Length: 77
Image (cartoon, rainbow, N blue to C red; front, side):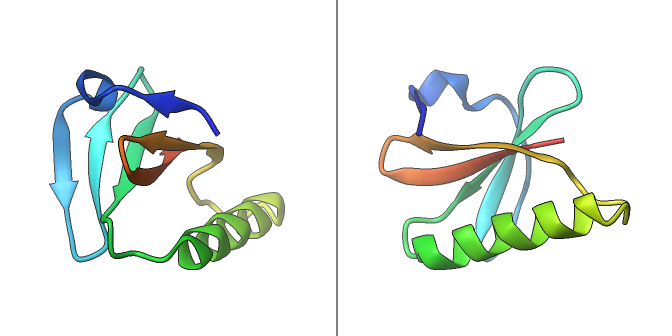
């Protein structure tokens, strides 16, 4: 799992109960989960997004899972 330094998070777009969303390169965002969110829940969300996307249902594409400090994130379309 790639690790990013804090400055690579990008600009904050949104935040919610489970995560914060940051800009990345054009067409991609970083969904950075809060520390109290379980890795199993993140893995389940990743799996569901991939299945839904493979079925052709419009949904964000998952590019990779990353670590930013102690937090886990997803790079999404």
